[in-house]
Image (cartoon, rainbow, N blue to C red; front, top):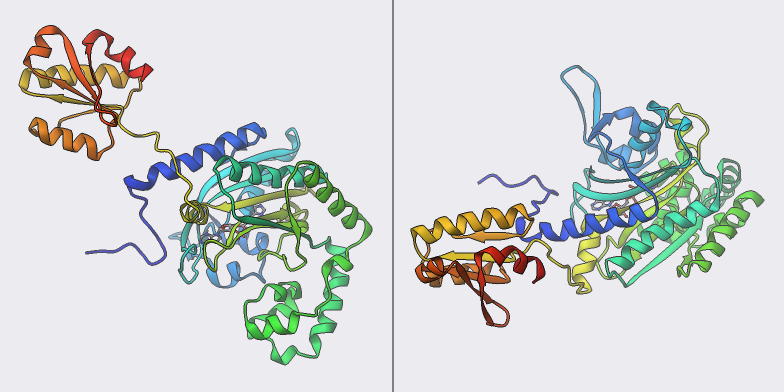
Length: 417
Ligand code: HAM
């Protein structure tokens, strides 16, 4: 037997309805916020991510699926959605379209990570990117969109943490202060953090190594170093969230694992799904578009991990509706009845009614058993007397109530029940 590669999963028919429900709800919420879909390629030139996500990140250093294609180009399977969207924005000249450009995506992502609950090598994101506006409104709107989706899905039991990591200028001052603070204990930092100390010291605050955690406990806080412009921006985002009734906590420890962030950063974190508790993360990235060769266009967005979201929904007992269940199972009792069932099923399906009938030559008892197994709402028996009278004998499986409906009225019955 050949197994799936480590860190990947099949989504089987018995669970795909959950994905469809989440995806449809996400699409509906995006639509209400006037956000349109964008689809970018599954793979990009490696440079999109090395320049976009950043050379100092775990993603670029350790986790990318990178290979040379047959033409000798370095290609990478997308580890996240933002850099590809930014590349598409620049390449397609969207800067001259009506700004802000508001897009969403539902996409696979690939990261070579150590698999565990909620952490896969192929996973799925619902992401939002709002490009072209500096206004704090759009940061708040982005966060509100994520919260609206979680509310619509019935998700509870998470905390929204927000922070501001400032702009290039104030970050430089902060990095200097942080480096000075860390310099005494530099030799005690893990090897990765020694590297981060040089490339992006703020990332040290996000290290899970217990020694590094201990050392950073009393470190200076970014919020004490941000400039007036960043401070005002952050204050406005917070007040808009408060107006919108979105509860949040300010956490100076939220620094995010990707290099492109500026100003607002945020994470929705749950304690109900184990160590990988961040279900959604995002923030502002005002330098990314120019970093990829575009104009000086700001952006803000988030991505929500669908596997983690599902894990949380299952753990807190959200009942996910299955809209794919069979409405009517037709149970013919012989060959001529079978032909009638085929004819009726075709008419019902043309009207979009989910309908099934016997394909296995089962006896009537076995057909009922099968109909029950697939969760059919009604079973319609067609025997020789029904065929003669032009009716179908319907049984509602949940209640056992039986009704007779004329063949000609079957569509109307199925639509109304
Ligand atoms: P990220 O924090 O790297 O941000 O990922 C966003 C979400 O994707 C995480 O919160 C998590 O739910 C999910 N995720 C990440 N890695 C894995 C994994 N290995 N297995 C399962 N789920 C995972 C980004 O990707 C940014 N592009 C978000 C963004 C959009 N920022 C601005 N715009």
